[in-house]
Image (cartoon, rainbow, N blue to C red):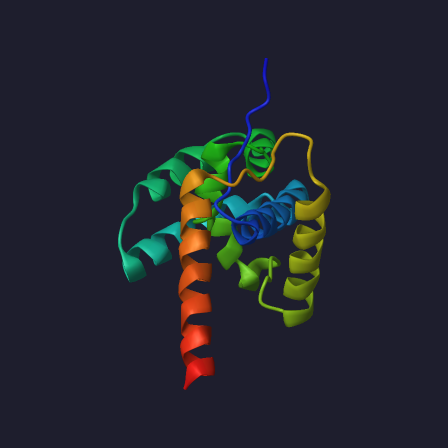
Length: 155
């Protein structure tokens, strides 16, 4: 079996993805001690759907939340593209009233710092590949940036 490699458009994408993974790992640990979080996560999905409308990920999360706790915990921490996509809309990120508070600035900074550190040293099952699209966008940005800097200097 080969490891799945996740391709990121930028280092920022990689760091953001890792912050979500870290938060889901924290949720998984809490879920081991508090199975009521599943019920609260389901309620959170309903609230989000009422506020911002339905997206397909909501149904996928509902299916996951019907699984046994051990499988939910495994999926929360799985490192694959499917779960990377689902973690964007994780219902566990909205449970501050139930013991999973990700709103504290100090904790958010710690999580971001850990993700940034991991992004620099993680090579086990993922890597940051600069796609041709990314390189073209990067070159265009710098070409425009240099042009505007020269115009400012000439003025």
